[in-house]
Length: 109
Image (tube, rainbow, N blue to C red; front, side, top):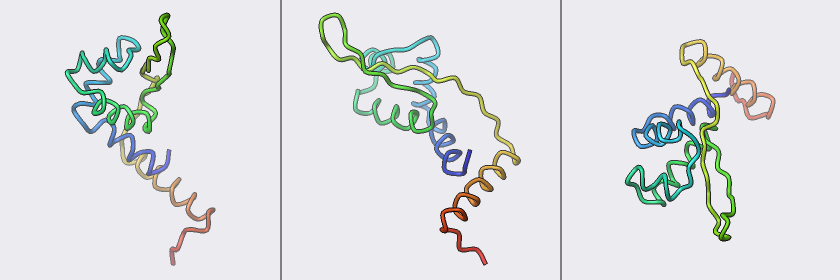
């Protein structure tokens, strides 16, 4: 994990609404309209939060057709577990620094 991935993860779980989404999806996958109803949230706002959670690889979305031909977007939790301590932070920074140097972007002197 590099620092960008670590920041995406921390940002994703650092919001009360996104924690509520994770809690709702803990019991199984739901389609967006049902999830929005349960959370009392508009679908556009829900999609914004789900996008953050997807970027952090905490949830996965899948488009499916219902029996009557309607497209339904389902979301489910991806298995995750993480530990945050100084070693994780150092490793993430090292990974990022290493990637920047190999890309020729590192400008350390």
